[in-house]
Length: 218
Length: 218
Image (cartoon, rainbow over the protein chains, first blue to last red):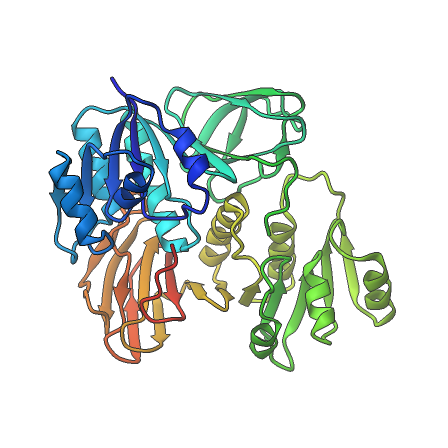
């Protein structure tokens, strides 16, 4: 099955970085205005999903003319555009998901995006969210491999209770540990070398990795 | 009991706004480098908590000379400075908490800060997080009153399953609704007038309100 890349209408300040994330045969989904980012990179989305309130009408016409499929929803709906897009690609059988442009700083959207992923991960989807500054992984296969540079910050957060966590290659090791969502204590761990491995037996674990070593974000 | 204001070392780009949030008789806690923000506003923290890795040594000396109490932890610890500070003020009996400087964009810190609040709210603390752009409320008394301007965005997120939610004064009303953390569907509601009320019967609800009407953050 092809990888599916969903592009939300978030932070897109570094188009070169985003262009490098896309592979030739990805199934590309533009989430509303996110379709415009793909268009500006010269890539035709396979699918556009949303209420079209943030997609330029002229661009929408060009995308339709190019053969891009549209799934349009009314603007007043219970779910966000991103949630609707995720459900759609799940129904179409995609399991490996890269979600771009979804890590902006509007806190309600960020939390809603992350929380919406938990049932999908429980159903077997492997999801990565990324921007030029950070990567977030939610994997169901109970093993996360991280590549980076020594000193790079790695945080682990339990989105549901997570048991049997063991790490290799991190400065503060965990051995058969349990993490509870409401007592997060695995923040700001660090890569010792260039690789680390985190394994766990049960639960939805969120790995957060920053792309610059020891970068102080706030 | 006095209100307790905790100042983390996050976004402080608008010191005038922050100065206006502080009342004369607040119990002020500087979380590590956050103490420096209070110092720069001409306010002496009652307490400084942290590993002092982000507090200027000269400022620390002046604060100590002024009578400010310090609780210093080693830098390699399981909990974050903010979590330690929250536990301390809970032990000291504070129940009304304003947390400033904790809404920066380092996602692991933001999630860790929010998740850490859930047990405190379950124990009866009323917590507000704010910066010039947004306010977040976690209240245990099952009623949230919001004041703002028509069209202002209000999102509701369940941090635990929340039941019996009823709203007044919001564009998309809820009546005895249930929200699940992993199916967030109360994002981007709006104030109809200048006031709204959200009540619920059980669970930890996070209210997010943006200070500019219909501002598109991402």
